[in-house]
Length: 374
Image (cartoon, rainbow, N blue to C red):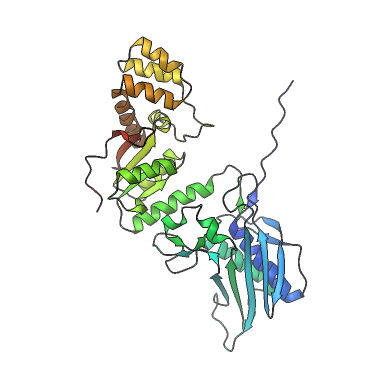
C-alpha cells in the first residue's frame, strides 16, 4: 500500500500583518461606521491576504480594532496573540510634510528599543520597518495617497505583550516592555525558521553595536545558563542562542566581523558539529553510533569499548562511557568542532569550544586561555 500523502503545512501571518490589518479595520470603522468581518492586506511580497477581524469598537472619535495573529503550522510565542490598533484621524492647520501625515506609535505591550544595532533606533517602539510599510500601505488603501490636512495617528498595542515578551529573547536584545512587531514578507511559512535566524542576526547586530568582539553561541537555555556561570566576566549581550543553526551562526558572526566565537554545547550537539553538519536538528542530522564507535577505534579505543558505544541509545549514554573510559576522546571532539566551524567561514574568526557534561561542568574548554572580555 502506498504511504498516505502528508497534509500540507498551513502558512500564517506575522505580527506586522496583524497590526496592519487592525489599522485598516479601524480606519474602515471611522469611514463607514460599520464593523468589517475581515480586511484585505497587501503583503510585502506583493501578495494579498484576507485577515479576520477579532473585535472593533469606538471611543468618541477613536476606533479600536484587534486581530488574532495566526502563525499557521509553525507557531511561536505570539501565535493566537491579540494585536490591536487604536486609530484617530485629526485635522491639522498646516499641511503635513510628505511622509509625516501617518504617525505610528507603540502602545501597551509593544516593546521599546533601548540598545543600538536593531532595525529601529533606541527610544523608538519595536515596530520594524517592514510592518511600518504595511501599516502605511493599509492607511493609503483606505484614505488615499495624500489626504490634505489630515493626520492619521496609530497606536499599535498588544494586550498581553509584556507577558509574551518574557518568553522571548527581547530583553537580551534591548527591547523592553513588550514584544516586537515583526515581518519581512508578512507571511509565516511553516518550518521556514526565518524568525529564529532573524533573532540570531539581530542578537549579533546588538552585540557588535555595543562594542563586543566576541560572542558565545549556545544551542539552548540550559547550555547558555551553564556558559554564563562559567564565563561570568562576559556581558549578557555576548550570549546568543543559536538552536540548530551551526553554519548560519558562524557565517553571520564572520559577516559582523567578530574576532572570537565560543561554541558552548552538550555532547550530542558537539558530535554533530564535529561531523560538520550545517544544521544539527534531529530531523536533518542523526548521530550514527556505529560511525562514532569506528571514530573512537581509530583514535585508540579498544574493540570491546567500541562495541559498548555502538550499542548505546543516546548521546548522554555515550558521553558517560567515554568520560569514564576514554576521556581524551572528548578533546578530539572539541578540536573537530573548531575545525568544522572554520570550514564554514572565510575569515580569521577564532573559534573556541566548550563541551559541558550534564551537570554543567566543562569536560572540554579551549576558551580558558583567552583573555576575559572587557
